[in-house]
Amino acid sequence: MSGRAAVVLFTRDLRVHDHPALATACAAFDRVVPLYVLDPALADRSANRTRFLHQSLAELRDTLRGLGGDLVIRRGDPVAETIRVAREVDAEGIGLSADVSRHAHRRERRLRAECDRHRLFLRLFPGVTVVEPGELRPGGGDHYKVFTPYHRVWSAARWREELAAPRRVTLPDGVAVGRLPALPKGESPAAVVGGESVGQRRLTQWLPTLQRYDDIHDDLAGDQTSRLSPYLRFGCLSPLAVANRAGDRGHPFVRQLCWRDFYYQVTAAFPEIAAKAYRRGATEDWRSDAAALDAWTEGRTGMPIVDAGMRQLHAEGWMHNRARLITAGYLTKVLGLDWRPGLAVFSRWLLDGDVPDNSGNWQWVAGTGNDSRPYRGLNPVRQAERYDPDGGYVRRWVPELATVAGKAVHQPWRLPAEVRRTLDYPPPLEVPGADPVWLR
DNA sequence: CTCAATTTCGT
DNA sequence: CGAAATTGA
Image (cartoon, rainbow, N blue to C red):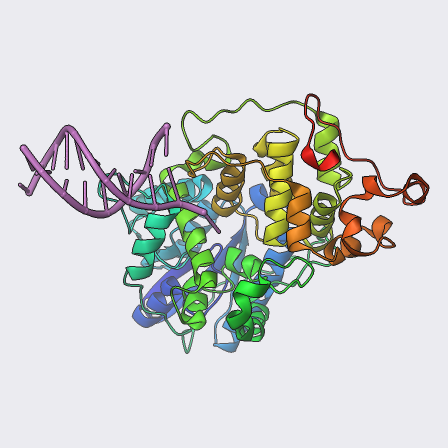
């Protein structure tokens, strides 16, 4: 063993650029162990994300090798394995990016206890969000509950300095690197590939469209959103670096990054966000209808714009944001079903699925979230006609309707009966006691 | 300075 | 309606 050593535990920050924990460790220590612990407890939550994770890890390992180091892989309980590695290499301590979920908080707490026991230091670093959760607080209270005031202070706040990748990473002598298992299978055939360079390339290619963002980000068929969310989810991209490259802090795209930070600081203060209504006094009288939930889940509700969104989710492990609003609004506001199973379905498939964003947005749509204004039930047909005016999005994802031209595809129940019979597409789900305007 | 009343505003 | 900022005692 030669020189002072530290361990950098990677979690959902799978990059070398603008990685405060890694940059600081490499600047302060001769020897650094970049470590990832494969946690069997997390492995089977989402096959899509597990595959994306492994792709990102493989690339991170290659990048670190290029810098003279490596990515050390262990399997098991992240806390026990991290401590074990730290002791093996006689490290002085451990650094990692702070995170907000209940799982992450528990990991941090256990890690701190073990570090105390073994006389190691534990240091938490920023990097998962643009502005650290808890850094901005309203006059009275620990976190912002409404987006607009948060956005105001977020835009005006001082952001930390973006950090370069370390020029060199040197492992301690004799550390066993460990191996990545064979790339696991995902569920979605058209899922994007994980990794820092893929994310960087996507960002670079997409940035020129920023000037037209307002015109195109809600166009379902145009499909011109950044699609950076999975890379942000796994930290292949630094949210700060993305915001900086967008330039103008007031840009509506940067505002979307602020929404992400907003839900992270909500989750840090309300870790039960995935299970419990955030707003106390929220009415939660959901119906129970297993058949309707199944139809929604599988994309056969008979509401083309909803089915299109769900089919895209299955095919790509990703859904256009506008389609997320429409499908989630349809489940909760039209079918009257609980947001939790909807959240669980998104969570299984989405490459970008995480606790703060996924839960926060579902609660916002369901009306149990921070938005104190009574949420108006959304009309899926009107949404479809506004955001998919020619029906191209529906025809792309619902092949049963591929022969129906124009916006007529949004209301197949209005087609002549003899045409409908040829389509092999179900009539819209019925909701007991409801007479939706779009069926009149 | 603190704290309560009041005003403003909400993807 | 309730959160957050502002005003005022």
